[in-house]
Image (cartoon, rainbow, N blue to C red):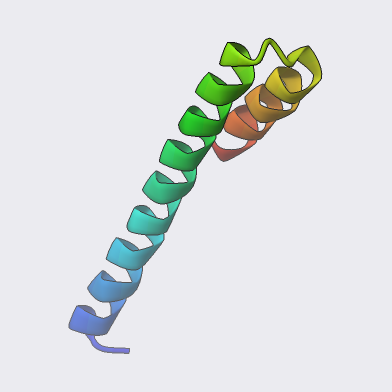
Length: 51
């Protein structure tokens, strides 16, 4: 596989991980605003998983 293609794949993976992280952070803020403890715990566990 070419270096450019490998770099593009790496960039896509990084962007995907960043998007997941941003989504989780937003969902966590909403859960906290609603004081939904169960959802907060689930989202915090997901954030640990994705590191």
